[in-house]
Length: 194
Image 1: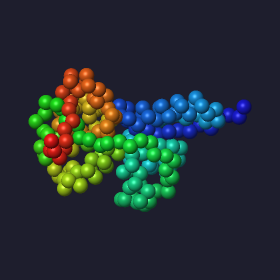
Image 2: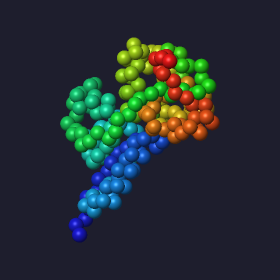
Image 3: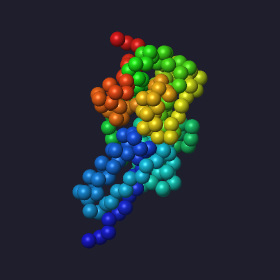
Image 4: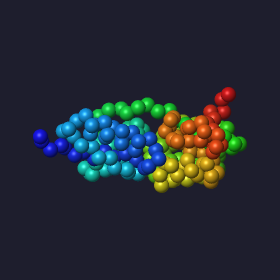
């Protein structure tokens, strides 16, 4: 039998959806295809994965849609000649606050400590696009907190050291009803609609 081809798949920081997704994809490929062996590597996230792909330090990587768009079209950098192999899954972005927080709209969070995601995460760029569409600027209108990894935002929210963080639907452990009740985490319409 011929030796298998080893492939390194870049994911993101522990606690987010990319490591879980990447580990699952790697396990399935490793189980069904003897010609490939996929190893996953935690990275800082989408914005680190693009240059790691370009340098050849990763063979494949999970990259959030807005980051892929900016890299491929050359927003703030030369365009990247990186092919897209497959779309992973669609996700709804949301802003998460504690259930007992007085904030019910994005406007309620002006000048408050807000974690926009882990350094290098596509969530930071997604939040920037959403806020720009609402006429807001993360640097100007909020007290920006960048975490080292995704789970830090969830823990910080539970401990009330931040007032909000962006997340993707079903991405974090805080989406379990028991955790929501215990941690007081709730989701509200960011535009204040009933």
